[in-house]
Amino acid sequence: MPRLIVFNNISLDGYFTDPNGDMSWAHKSDPEWNEFAASNAGGGGVLVFGRVTYEMMASFWPTKQASEMFPEVAAGMNKLPKIVFSRTLKEATWNNTRLVNDNIAEEMRKLKSAPRGADMAIMGSGTIVSQFTQEGLIDEYQIATHPIIIGKGRTLFEGVQQKVPLKRTKTRTFENGCVFVCYERVG
Image (cartoon, rainbow, N blue to C red; front, side, top):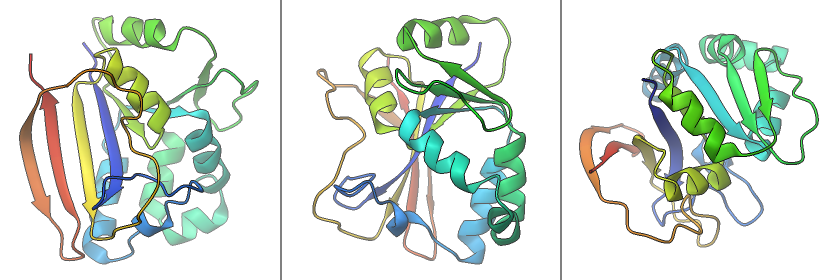
C-alpha cells in the first residue's frame, strides 16, 4: 500500500514560511544540498500539494530558468505525477497533475488503501499537512531544519488538536547547517 510522506523545510523556530508566505530562506545553493535535492526529486512517487504550493511550484519548475539552474530537480518535478488538493482551483495546468476539489481526507484514504501504487510526498502545503496529520493519514515526516530564526510565520501543524507520537528513523547533518530528520508515526 502506498505511504504518505511529508518533506518540508522549517526554520529553527519551527516555521515553514514567514507571515507573508516567503520561503526563500530555505533555498540553499551548495553542492551537497543540491545533490540531496536532486536525489529526492529523482526518487519517483507522486507529488502532493495544496493550491498555494502547487501554484508556486507550477510557476517555476516548468520554466527554462528552472531547467538551467537545477536541471535534475526540474526534470524530476516535471516528470512526476502530481495531485493538487484545492477547494478553489478550477484547473491544473502543470503536466501530469490531477486536481481534487472535494473530500480530501476521503480521497487520500482511497489512494493509501490501493493495493499497489507509488508512495506520495507532500511538499510545502502546510494546510494539507495539518489536515492529514489530524486525520492520521501521514506515515512519515521528513523535516529539514535550517539554521535561521525568522520570528513569525506558519507552522506545519496549525489546527492539530491531539498529540501525535513519532519515532526518529534517520538523521543527516549538512555542511550548510541544515539538519534533516525523518520521523514515523508510532502506533
